Image 1 (tube, helix red, strand yellow):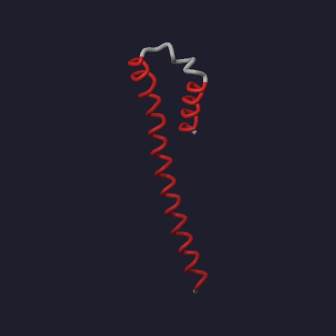
Image 2: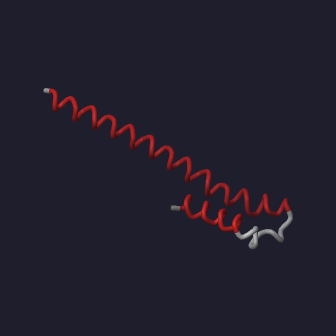
Image 3: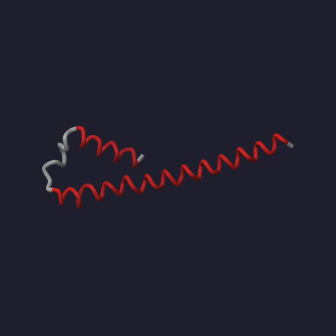
Length: 72
């Protein structure tokens, strides 16, 4: 949910024409908005990716075990 919330937060800024952050300088935006908020996108995205691959791997093992039981 952190990933979704942060992406929606960025999209809201984009679609309102940067109404909440547009008055800042480029360096302020990078150091005080993009880097801190970007971490809230990158880290949860990596976690979601890793969790997804682990789940798919577990489901594949379970499916193979189920198939092996049915053939016996």
